Length: 170
Image 1 (tube, one colour):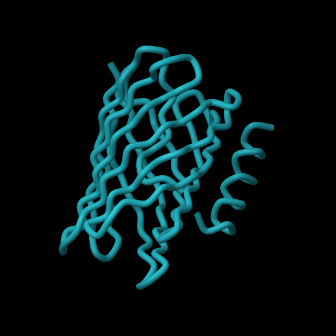
Image 2 (cartoon, rainbow, N blue to C red):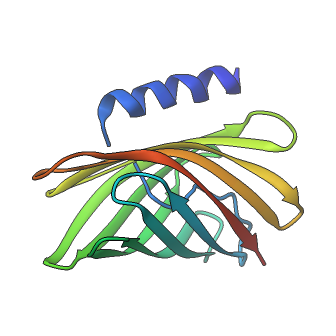
């Protein structure tokens, strides 16, 4: 049942055209995750993120996306757990030309004992973004991430591509 719900959520996420650049991590209260994600989209981009679960239901995160050929985006965001598999996302993205608030949602679930899948969506006044991916547990506190991300600015071309990275939880 969980796999079916995750697949439906992923399809809805792709159709809605909105998501989140940092992977969706399952953290325990007081736990921190730091990670990197490399995307092969054009232009290529690298993402660095830091998240900390402040309470049972709230995670605070920072993220930097560096576009290889100029520009970057810095995010500060919060994730509110609405249930075990559903999160609301509120954030602020600082583009080189100014800041914009965004709202979103994420769904995640277990695909197998070592794989957790997710789909995330965010939308702001200048962009929409979708990400669908999976985290593979390499060790108790290390995950490998594989994802597909689509970034759709209001002006300009869409940026789509596969990404991979790793997270360290402590």
